[in-house]
Length: 127
Image (tube, rainbow, N blue to C red; front, top):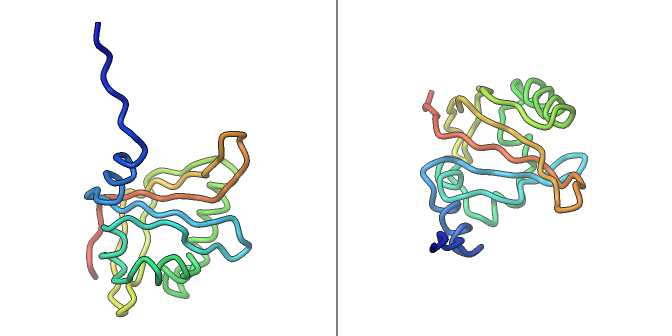
């Protein structure tokens, strides 16, 4: 019997980068900085890879939305993940949009050490 061929890591990385949904992650700093964004995220936030990977993740939300965002991330850190989140975000040009049905989870390495958090969502609307 033939087994399906396992996709290579480069192929998976390419698929994730060009996927039709937003996929982002940030590091473990006290004021986390984004360390990954796929093409959909870069387009939505209207930034380059270099700009996004220097952005503190809190700055993706407007100041009045940051407390709620921080509460969500603390809950995810405790529980491991959260589903169904919605919130307002802002692009580099100041365009506001609502992200919907977001799943956020903790990133762990092969040894189970905490390495940051990631989020994925396929629904957003401009405000």
